[in-house]
Image (cartoon, rainbow, N blue to C red):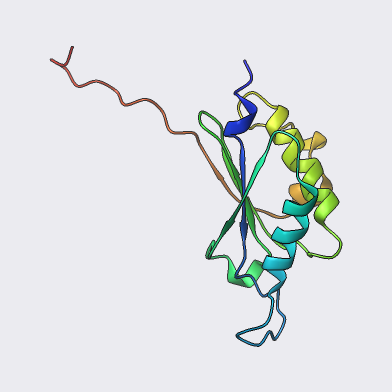
Length: 131
């Protein structure tokens, strides 16, 4: 059964420099990526800026997550050329019941640039004696 769409979230690291020498007060590639995605939007996905996803050597970096779903961290996005790829991949993630999009159905960039796959949180297992 599919999860409610509003519970799917795309986190976009706004601190990613993507290998560019950006002045401290300059706009970073991660911020450009976030602004482009937020401006266009993605159906059934909340787009959230985050300060850092600790994947600095592989930026620009994003994460997809939702309750009861597998979470994914992806890297090496170019803010100028990969917005459509991200929109496609996030839409497929949102349409899945558990976050598991079949490998061959993922955009090629998603297949080649997955940094981490994290299982969903399971409900706590009651201890013996708990009711």
